[in-house]
Length: 380
Ligand code: MUC
Ligand code: MG
Image (tube, rainbow, N blue to C red):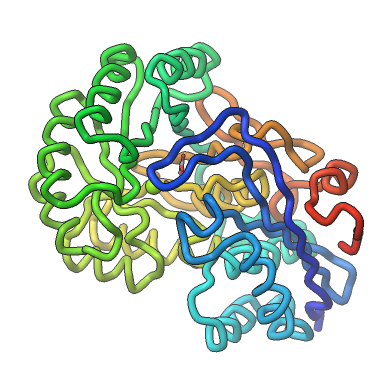
């Protein structure tokens, strides 16, 4: 039996190309929690977890993810069969409540290591890729309408993105709507425009705003109301002329089931972090498919490792009805991979190599890791 021998984690701080303004936080840098898992035969796997704005977005921070991996998940999995992901992840599930971001990093690393040993891509371990690339939306979130329009024009010209998600919810609804209308008018039929409210509106505000946004040609409205209010989401969804997408409302498979049963949203944002990894996210995807709910490949603004882990999982699905937003690496000025992910013709291309299909640039990692002085991570 090949067993799990050690888990090494570190925090990696990377600057963003510009401030990224969300309803609850403005990002100036992103922190990756990097996990390197070593098995008894010497094989290694990488995993990554990110969140947004410390504890502003979710119940886990980069520091808590690292601590919980080191303190609780590592002792549970060390010595276990590295090839039996069902047994390992079920063991973790029995002893660790929530903490899906940490679980996602672990599940990713286990899959990557298994892929290295077997010479198979991560998507192949998940049953096989049916897409070679995924179309990727870009988020306009500079906080300035003119800058956002210029940025969208540049992305269209580069053939990098033709779907744009606008982050709103921080300003007065009327101002936000004017911002969206101006951008949609500037882009016309050359691009699709979606919005993400990140839970900022009350039901009453959402009802009026969704009508105005739909009238302006917005094609998708993400998480307009607070995540715990399934009924409000269902009522807004029923009255909104544009489809509504559940994002923060899904923090687990049972959440997804409750939303589907309530008919709360016709579209689900899938994120490996929210449900505990590339295998776990596919359970939500399959539940949604059974309920006739459209799929969107979401991000927690992961770096390249988390982004490609998501891409491998999403590429096993017959269809992502609303495409993906796996642009995280493009929001960062730096990468810690030898070869950053390839974006071409509006798509993120899936790597071909074993596991995630990536290799770390050790020098860059040494430079950007937070604890630069203690280079304790085991090297390959
Ligand atoms: C979110 O709420 O969807 C995804 C894209 C982006 O800009 O922020 C994330 C989080
Ligand atoms: Mg969202």
